[in-house]
Image (cartoon, rainbow, N blue to C red; front, side, top):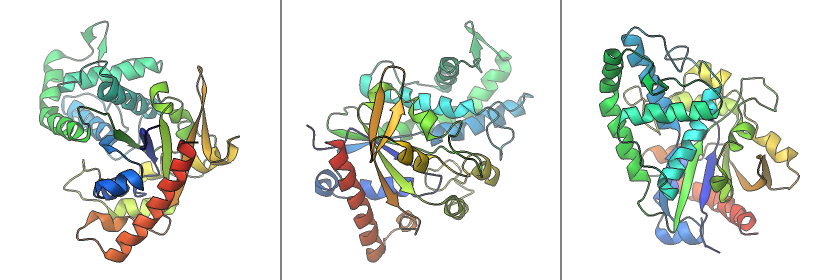
Length: 324
């Protein structure tokens, strides 16, 4: 058996410390990453860039006289909850392009439009951009939308390539995303982790373990406001989720529910038509914030020591379950 994880699903509410955890791990020396964290060379996937560019698509469509497509408004939640599933299926697409090389990475914004449509169709929804081989928008206006997004999309592609090595042999793929439900909701949630984990491909589920960064919804909202950099809204580390979204989409999540309902302690049960999967999970307690210091260097040595202890204990626990 390999001495590193194949796939880590890094899950938590927004601003819980997922991205800081990724950065902290990335900056550890190779021996610690392999022997303590059991992580191979760096490969990362995240659905936030798609969330961000969906906002930009809406803005450009509005300029051309169309209604917003994805969101009720720039600072509001999704019009259709199914978009959470679309994002999950796009992570499957990323995985296939990275590991299986089953199709070329989309080289322009038009390729992204097609990928979104593919995911929507897979979930039984109507496509947004093309139908029966024809664009659903006025050609001139749609080209203006695409042209306006070209630079942002090229930046997104560059960042994605930087996070995805050409050869994944010996790599650990860290997949980061957040799912939840409205404040006051009671599990099962319509589009929480239970639903979205079951949309991940068998290729991912066969090899995945979950590291869950645990904070309260109240702490998630506090840290979300604290990290905001209005000059860098597309940043993984500095973006701010609108308050209405924090309450309507991330007011709670269903991870504790999934842990408690599993018939195999220490594992999350994921049921798909072809098979039931049991994903090992470690929950690291970040309710007393141990990650925010990672944003700025140099790091406080005591805070660095505390985070190292928290994460190393979590990964050691997770590895024992993973290799069992």
